[in-house]
Image 1 (cartoon, rainbow, N blue to C red):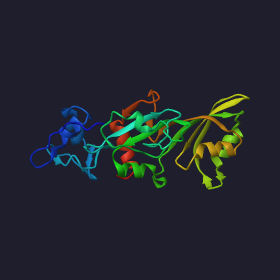
Image 2 (image 1 turned 180 degrees about the vertical axis):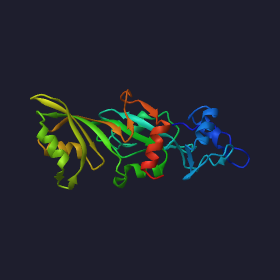
Image 3 (image 1 turned 90 degrees about the vertical axis):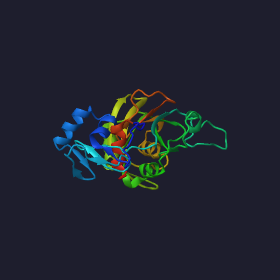
Image 4 (image 1 turned 45 degrees about the horizontal axis):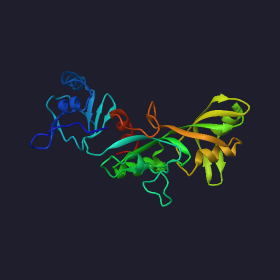
Length: 251
């Protein structure tokens, strides 16, 4: 999400309804109605007085319960990482890396977690180091959705086994959701939702239950989904996506 061009007053503050309107919440008039209806909360307090000023960089604002990200020069991007691209910014072996896909960006970007070289799909990029660190930390438990093409026919009993929990050599794995998308005797497609980011965790998990992975794609990270983003393409996070992730990261 790119920051809106908002000029603060001499005191560094901005009228709340102006900030809401210029952030794309609604028209100025509608934003005033939202305030008067008690639907705008700033730093934990309902604000109904029109003309109230806030610091757009630090105020924690919610509109009808949804977080409005602060005004910032930070960038928050979604990348559809193609297969074969290494999830680093440089590679001593000369393989294609993330930096090749963002070469035209002026910022120094961090990747949030990583995807195996052979895994494609959704990866977040940002120049906000705190955000990147928290989003990759297991204690914040952001759900990640994967679609895997695997060998053999997956049956409901295997899905039940996954949901009941599987223990790998480095500990137990919790699967939040699992479903069969398609199944034939030769191969199946399954969708899994997990919040862990251990090395090659999905591949190891499915191999453990007897279905080695042929192809693997991460299709969602928390509220952010790939949608129609093509391999190698980037987009900004939406205001709503970023707001949810900031809440998840307790930022």
